[in-house]
Length: 343
View 1 (tube, rainbow, N blue to C red):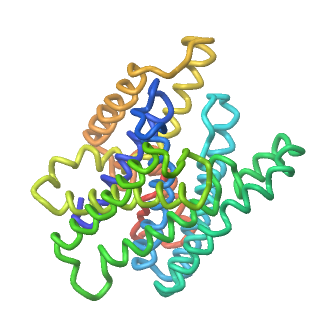
View 2 (cartoon, rainbow, N blue to C red):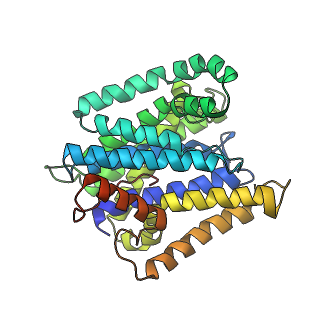
């Protein structure tokens, strides 16, 4: 795996592990009265959709990338709608990420100033979108409610995801520039530390009662809080991947490369827990966190040992989506476009 891909893949792997904590840990390692994993997981996935869109836009024509984006978005939506039927007790984010994938195809083609405007606009309107949609949500049910939640979910609002994705696009243009030199490691590390310090200051302010930040509140401050944290993690992953630590992070990066498969397996396991294995018993336990985490590392290691050709070496669902992309683009010999999103 090349250096340019390892950083985003490591970030995806950490997002997967954070997701396991958010979904199954009994207390989620609370910081400042709220769970760190609840802050990090979905904005980091949203940021990585932007990262993937920006990197992919450089490796193919606009037409090919649009077709690839449509296939990937459709795959996310279809898999997301199917997973809802599993009744795992987990709010499925794949449908929201499917729409975000489509939006990022256009946003990634804008100049950086315009991308920043999109991000700020999304940040400003996010609280309003949730408030306006509340009465609609009260009257909706079934498929209508699922479709409404794709745009204005009270847990995963599309505007917050778009803010995170726009941030990911801008960070990618800085960390992986098209023409100029990659920024010095020290400079990138300073930015990462500055982001972490900013986030820590907000944690302290929340702990002292100066501000109030709760996960999924979709206030202006909460959006800043989660996007700054996700940005710090992403920058840290890219910096670490470019150091001597890079090879040691390869197992985490490989987990990131199998995100969609692991997401689906997690939901299936939690559905089985709720309906077959331990009905009536909460899935929140450190046993489940450990099982999902180490099980993922083991599964990826075993899968990589199988004599599989690309793109199947990344994972079964990843391979299927990549083959569908190649078929839809219409050039069987064309290189598969890789995106750091849960596909």
